Image: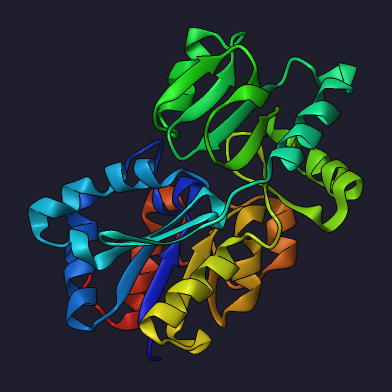
Amino acid sequence: MTIKLIASDMDGTFLTSQDQYDQARFAKVLAQLKEKKVRFVAASGRQLENLQELFAPMKEYGLLDQIDYIGSNGSVVAVPGQVLSAVYLKPEQIQKVIAWNAKNASITDNLIVLAGTKGTYVSNHATKEIRDMLAQFYPNVTQVEKLLEIDDQILGVSFIWPHDEVQKYVKIIEELFGDDIHVTGSGFGSVDILPKDVNKANALEILQDYYDLTDREVMVFGDNSNDLEMLQKYEHAYLMPNAADFMHKAHDKEAVATNVETGVLKTIEKELGLNPS
């Protein structure tokens, strides 16, 4: 096969645990990809700054320029030194989403996160433990008195619920708001509200246009519903074996191993004929 772009989700897919991956092994794979003129894309619900921090160690290997980024589930697309695309929610969309949440008494204690270009915003009731947890995935976490008065452009709104309730709330919000916004589930119990038509597959099309690549030259990896569009779009698409049952019903081609077994790197080595690490 002729692959020129490999995109991987992060949590539950590329990362073996929170913020962890085998840096030496990835550098060896990335160096071989560079020789074949294949680029790697970190595609995640995490914000761009967090993704860039995750892969900063690749600078020591001279490979940082081989990595592109899809952040905030497709709201931001960036190549080294340049943001190609950034899409924001409209103020009235944010107001509508927050107002809906406030009227649902049974879930008023859930956490609301607004991801902006300047920082990440949560309400004042968030505990230190919650703020520390968010800081692992979001940059510049700031508590604010009123979420609707934030002076920033907002890439997405996230609700944090118990993990087993995520898909239920994705369906509820989709039914309530229709096509005005895009709703998807990410890891860690997150339901993400994004601008209309924002997803990882559409973000990858921006990179394909930039590099002049066809769909058949793209390989993707994912594990959750925020990866579903790209898993369904591309021929060379691999679901992680550790994905939830509903994802296995939606997609049947699997990576050769789970995320904790570095399944993404092992699959890349196998499918592209690289020297195993």
